[in-house]
Image 1: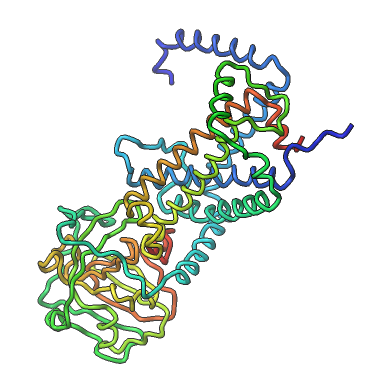
Image 2: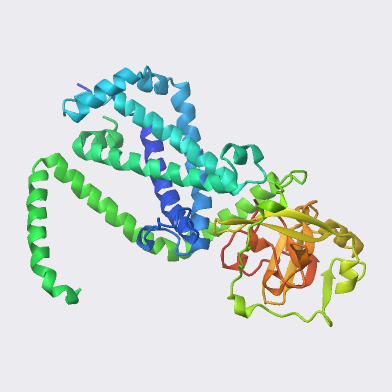
Length: 197
Length: 260
């Protein structure tokens, strides 16, 4: 019997391109951050940054922003038009999230069907998507604070846009850590994201 | 590493425990495979990380995309869009000194024999003394200086509208670039649309006082629509040209347009 497809090819491709883009954006972003830290107490170790110096890091950041955005546009368009996003994420209720969260903490959440997301998972993926949108918009506000005044004001001005950008990056890192921990707990999910089933 | 010999026993004990834990965790074949892959992926990305930054072809690619980003920014630039201005109460005090050298290396330009030279595609007066420049119509602005490092500070600069100066000097405003040579060996260049922007000022004062040396005496080109490094200080020569002039930081890899 042929195994059923869990993740279609376009999803797997956009997922891994996104991983690459986010890796470059985050590590180069850390180098840029270190040039003038938003929070004096928080500095990123040079060993895990990309670019070598501020100018190099900026080149990486402003090159891979195109890959990040273009890839997310493809992902978003196919996801919306195919109805996959609606099917996979919704309906999503606070009650279901609480119920599944309790089950997860007791270790009683089933993972037998990888094509079905539990409510906590749905919320996490939705939050990651919204967070990526906030990251991109706050980044755009920092880059073009004069050309996009409405975006700058939405972020609370130029300086606050940097705070928003940093916080959105931090949230994405928390998501990534939890996401990877879940992959370690359910290794089949990695195979599914590579082979599709 | 060898200095820590006294700690080695502790470290060995920890390692044993970790290896035991790992063995238990890796008992499942799928997990072992996953860990192997994760290790390979991790080390591969680390390796390529170091090499990528030095690789010539990668550098060429990054520089090309940076030039592409110049085009995009030129296209995004709206000459009618003004940078925000602020009340004087919001001026950052003290306004930070910033240059590619320390404050004790700031050049001291002699006002007496100073002359601003304007060359290239200009048809009018080519040498300007300070009294002649001070006699031009003056205006002032409180705007935000945004550094490429990320920090920003609000300051008040006064001087003459740059487009007005270019007009009086008979500059060909259909040329592509305006380049700047400075007394501190700094150089930069800008696009003509930004040079003609209403908020682009050739400034002679800071906060109502003659521009002090640390802020760029005798003059600084102030553009709130561009990042700090695009705003040259201690200008001695202005060149109107169609040949790409580059600049001190730009030649090292900073984005040329540097627009905000």
